[in-house]
Length: 624
Image 1 (cartoon, rainbow, N blue to C red):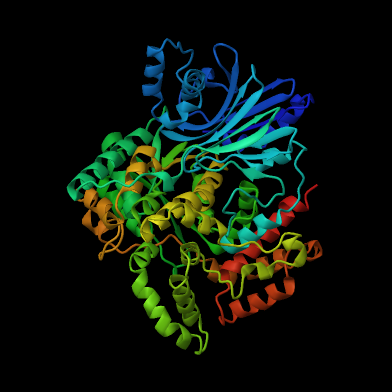
Image 2 (tube, rainbow, N blue to C red):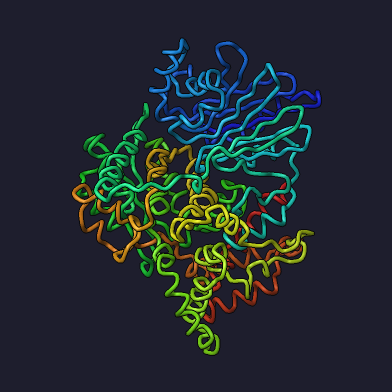
């Protein structure tokens, strides 16, 4: 696991070694073990290394192919690199190192981009071909590993984090109004845009190619393109069990110890069960909880699971007061405003593990692969909910708008939406079009861009999956939108800020492809979600875990904003410099905060997002 960056010019302008070194240095936290650069004419590549596989100096990057034609910088892990290495050796390839990086590099030489579907892992990499003057950026199927770029028609600037692009001196600190509007709706950008003008994400499951003739982006994989399968129920249960076991074992491949983030839920408990059997009693598990006792705390469940499997368990606790010091650091980690407050405990937990472990497994992806969220059950009975909404909706609109009534109206409006894309988006976000969160942006925050269609990405996802049942369409949309832009972004930035690699076995391509193809009825039923996964885990994971009601991992920022963070919010959001910049509508924000403090309306999410924008302004737009 590492950080990569680079500049490739196509107009004859040479790249300065000092610039590449400065870009690389911004990624030190991602790879504290080693650093390297490659500069030749109009090409500059940088790399920071976190040594996980082949800890020797032979794994140093940038890595040049044996024939000298290609240069590679790689962020990620290829779990099946030993099998690919054996296949390549059978074709006559001779290796100089024991690293997965060289396997990828030589695989590209033999198979070209046909090597990408063979990769079982998480990755973002850049390959420069010296013979033809071509650079390619490639990102894994689900976007577990990030990759950002700017293309101006003459040069490609790229990196694992936006801060590397800013350090190139070629990327201005200018606001992208579209990205900012998307953030205000969802708490993060959900497409290829970012909050920085001109900075774009390489899409998950895609590769970018740039030459003197131009630049193009191509998709090689998408969850909605996975064909449906029709195994019998017993076959599906058995194959789910075996493929999950294989995925966890594959994700344990490392030359350093591997631990597990344990919440006590089904997904992390399943990973713990399989990993404990493979690793033995020395397996380490980690959990996090909150000092706010009014909020759900999962540490008790996690402790019970750890005791059941006999792991070495560690807990940390998070407070609202302590979050004040962490928020600016998180903005620097993400480089953008980011609204999912669950990055706070993750960031703090990762910080606690510096010097303790370099690699942990986590349960992200289990809900999106096997339908763990309540909205999947709602969609499976959408016709009944729409009928209820038709009867109750007008009446609810006439009663006093208490918080409970607001939630009911929002829910009925979501299930009653006429097009599938709007329905999916409204089931995801707490925001509504009647009082859009973009109202908190001042005119300059909207820029010259017209108000975006906040549900455009979901409408496009719905269009791509026409012909499938509503649950399968929502699962495909979540895998393409929610996972990479919210959950995987959170995991990567909050943990790699401390040089901690997080692996997600439920997104193993073999397991995930199988799960996506299963019928919706195997995932959602009268008893709830994850039907086939729960059946596969019987006897492996205790029934008291499998049969427990699902509890989301929420962060009590609503109450923090009414208590320990009230003054901090006012200090940051209403700061005179923030008012002068004109990104936020401060009069509306003051009114919404008043309503929140008086408990007239729960304005927690938009107020939290406004705080992230103000912190981002302070850290990036006002920086010199």
